[in-house]
Length: 344
Ligand SMILES: Nc1ncnc2c1ncn2[C@@H]1O[C@H](COP(=O)(O)OP(=O)(O)OP(=O)(O)O)[C@@H](O)[C@H]1O
Ligand SMILES: [Mg+2]
Image 1 (cartoon, helix red, strand yellow):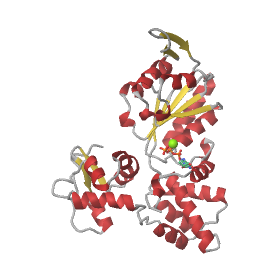
Image 2 (cartoon, protein in one colour; image 1 turned 135 degrees about the horizontal axis):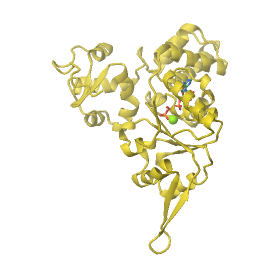
Image 3 (cartoon, rainbow, N blue to C red; image 1 turned 90 degrees about the horizontal axis):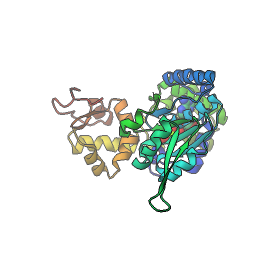
Image 4 (tube, helix red, strand yellow; image 1 turned 60 degrees about the vertical axis):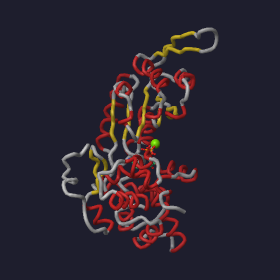
């Protein structure tokens, strides 16, 4: 099995496993205190007035809890949630069918909302703003525009790439909630919670080691726990110890910092092919033979957040700790790593 699969691919079986570990209520969610606080206030206000919550945009890197929170918000509001995604809505009619089924205060969750096509997106504007749709049926001569009014519903959009959203769409959300990577203690708490749900016995050091290598991401934490549990079952007595965790993770080629093969290849390409950068993302993607999107969505967020790489207007730059981490001699070229050009 290739290594990047641990982070990028998801089997059905695994999807179900992760679903079962998903917190259902706000109080079960670990961390994201800023988002949680805003959810609490927005839910309380909407409930007090008996109204729908304002539209919500959840943004942040993959696996941090956007889908989880969409469901949690519905549970806290005590309303039903309908789920769809940007790429699944190809025509106006698809969206029309969903919108006309909505009931007052219900939630429409649109995952990957940055992947909505332009026509559908524009159709969504009046639905979000004025709770009406102008539907043009293309049957018959010239087509006919019919105006429908909709019940007041809440749209929750999720995106890993809020930068790709048009400002027109972004402006129609009342709440913009941003997800951050989780800290070590939070990840430890998440893994502990999952271990309990799975009835896995684990010692404190084992939990901490898993947390340390989870790249600030609950989804990865849960996946690593699953792999480590397999090891514990097969190699030992089912108890998760630090030794079992180390063995499982080194078999997956996940290093001390939680980097996998693809992360290391990315850093090596940047350092060896491009002298540490700056290098454009397209060039790095071509060197590695990966899609630019995969690198931007799955690899870069953690490398940026852990300070191994910075993004400058002229391209990506490897930081000194990246050289150190890989045990490669040298460092960034003079002047490149001054941080003067950081885009973020
Ligand atoms: N705050 C949290 N507390 C505990 N577990 C969490 C939390 N957030 C996420 N998880 C766990 O992490 C897993 C991944 O979360 P989720 O699917 O919500 O991420 P996502 O942000 O929607 O990712 P993507 O962008 O890939 O769709 C969930 O199955 C859940 O078990
Ligand atoms: Mg999701």
